[in-house]
Length: 222
Image 1 (cartoon, rainbow, N blue to C red):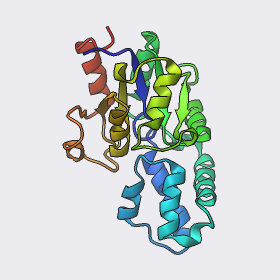
Image 2 (cartoon, helix red, strand yellow; image 1 turned 135 degrees about the horizontal axis):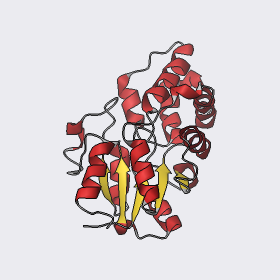
Image 3 (cartoon, rainbow, N blue to C red; image 1 turned 120 degrees about the vertical axis):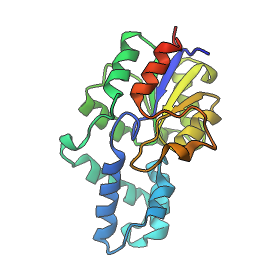
């Protein structure tokens, strides 16, 4: 088994942003007098923000008169947070630099909007390290559908079956697999456990450091 390209998810995989998204969502929802339930939150893990905003509108109609308005409110609050609130996940700096040093074709394929992707990448200093960055807002369907991974593979010119995808969520894992990619899942323990993926993926890792070790020891990009 070997690969020709590496496709990264972003939120919860490279960037420790899922708890921050959750905080922003709580602040917005509670400002309208609602209580944000864990069940509703779980529906949105890994989803495109506009698609999740439609779910939020169904459960909390006072948030806005359209999913677009709710998405804008969430995104605005997120972008206004102090930069120090956004941190890299353990092992993220190491795997990004490793891929760049080996000149492995690579890209981000994220459910976040392009403005959020660019904001986080800028804060992490990865603009040149991950030069190709793609948002699911520009494809027809968000994760768990395969569209964003197929788009990223097409843009970097590598067949999907030759790409290794790295994900943290169930929706993202299913998306990469549906695109025909091998997916290594590194669950974000703020919303998932290692056992949550037993029925969808047998390639589950406890950290990106473990992923790096597997890549090196198995010569996956030799």
